[in-house]
Length: 389
Image 1 (cartoon, rainbow, N blue to C red):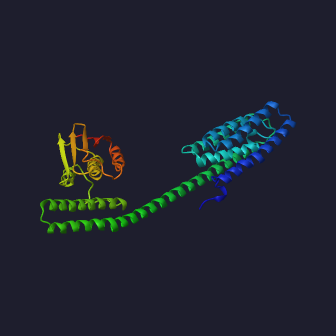
Image 2 (cartoon, rainbow, N blue to C red; image 1 turned 90 degrees about the vertical axis):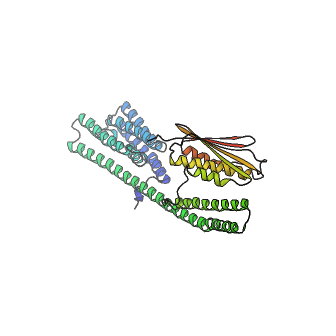
């Protein structure tokens, strides 16, 4: 339950308090200074009190920009007031404008990052002790001893209560923010579950039918090339299903099992072998000895190769040749996917629109990525290898 009476973080509430401090406390301090002048206070003391009071009111306005800086200004002003004698009191820390210090203290406890709330409490209590020590050192017997004790007790109580209420409001605000974040996370999980169901009902079903129809068509064909193409079509459908199931598990926030693993470097040979058709030639050249790669680097390498092949097939007129080259070095692996430009670009829009995700994936794996475009496209990436055990 929130303490609405003391919850001063609202803009309207805070502005009202700032306005009241200027309209009520400042005139009250001026009236007290007039009385002090009549009681014989020196002009220097009055000037110092006026400057310190002005600093306190400015500190309240400064909290809108920096609570810590405002607290530093207010603390300095209160320390100055502690050295100024006031007739009938121990010092000037009981001036009406001194209440501005409590407003600044509240704000720094509520807004400032840790450990500033605790520093503010220590500064406030230390300041009270210093002020009372100064007052006691110049006591001339006009004030009874119990009044000094009462004043110190009152100041400590007010400062501690202000700090405690501000800290309670801060904790309530942080709990409310945590509850809001938890509600947002639940909403995201619910939305992911909806997306998962939609993908499964629409896309997975359609791909399954496509694979089944391709397998059925193989039975009735008598041409070797047609049979080979249909087999590759069926295998591509199965691969898409495996990838879709892996994506659905990510959306559902459940760990993948052994049947739906992310693609690794061992999938590169099958990817190239199943990508070709009579009109689309894909070759793989691998130089050097394979080195261990991080899991995200393996995925990025395979996805880069897949995107380069898909990009060429989608945007170039057949026949098209794509060459994949993988060069293994002691400290890195370089992969290059280049096409021969085919018979020219198809009217399918500008090529390479799907490469943004590949670039981000390569960067996330600690690699570098480059695209060269002339009459053909060349995708190049490098990934660091892991140290051998």
